[in-house]
Image: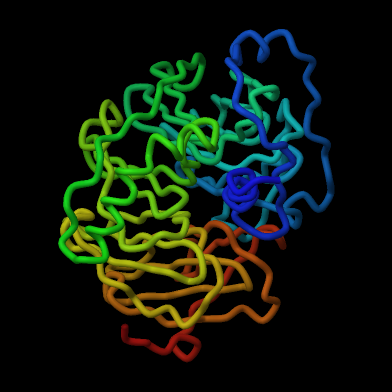
Length: 368
């Protein structure tokens, strides 16, 4: 397996227990809409312990939490993570890696085999609207906007858009503008190297960098975290993208917009950076860990939680300027986090779904 496919292994699973089985290959033209209709469906099997299996991503559908993971498993919680039930029907057994909701009822999930699923009943049942296993380009995340806008991203810069809440899809070539001159010598060197090698990288990888995570905030402001230190931003809902000056050459697995112009970017080996100018410059933040960081969410006023492998939970009470490491005793990898009831966090990962109670005695501040 070459370097690009190895990176896809990490990006697709977000935790060590999940594996990408695709072999290295140059992506082929796909007709996912046709295959979604003509290919036979293998529905996810119902399992008594579905909520304890490998779960990769989680989203809110109104007051409901919806988590997706291995073998097409989708589970739902109507009490903010206290209890979970399995979705009634999911027409896929692929590893699902991303999920989002346009409103309390309509959502989209994506995963391996370039599968895309939609729901109109808050995750209870799903429909397959795109499927292209021969492309060998797993989808890694999905963003839901307003007015039916949805963007799915994945390996080899795969970038699919929908204007009808995921019912139909169009593939778009991902061509971000080059990074501007960075404000630090290291950042400038990184930006210059990225610009010089971008064409070679796309040709060698069979289609560009892997796009690991897409998030949005406000009116049309979007961010993508990618492999090899790539960070991208859009101010027009994804119509155009620009490359941000990056502080790090390793892969990023998430971006978290904070209040105002502040951002957090995180990824391999516990690397975490904060920007106060929408990504024009970055400052490193001490994490106290070398575990891969995979998911983040705000929860209380000025509070942020970041989760990762080895049971890592990082907690900030000052808008991401400093973090305390709250290591979970089971050391199970965590991939996504959302606020739950009573000051707790709902998390999912290789041990399934659980709640984490953040008591004052468990969290001690660490300064960067």
